Image (cartoon, rainbow, N blue to C red; front, side, top):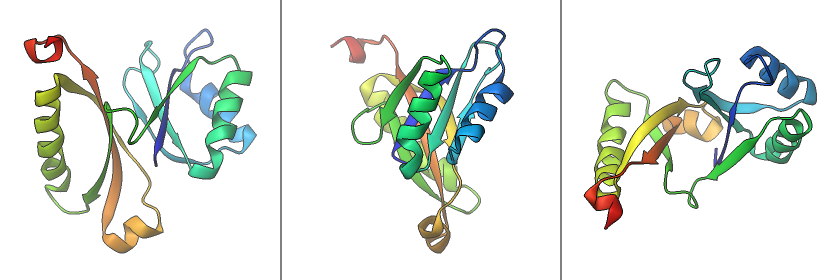
Length: 142
């Protein structure tokens, strides 16, 4: 789960079912999906399994979707957390993200909970992407 593709689920009219149908027909296997207001012009975030990243991008392009790619380790607005699967586990991880965001002038836009792979299951964790956006603050302008 080191790549996230973000797009608006619309080709007129907005339709997440159509977007997912196109990916399904192409054989794209997803490790996670999230977003907000996805049929009201908001972005949907998909995380294809590692071996399906190129296929997902090619499929979206061929279907006419404009998309953008974020990568863990390259794009500071995207964080990958391995959240302990217990009450309060997500909160514990978000405390760290919130502190880093405050220092960098970012706020959380959305959270995407992924499908645990074999390693996550063995470790008792759940993969979570946290997408944060820059806001104008004295910190972000300095």
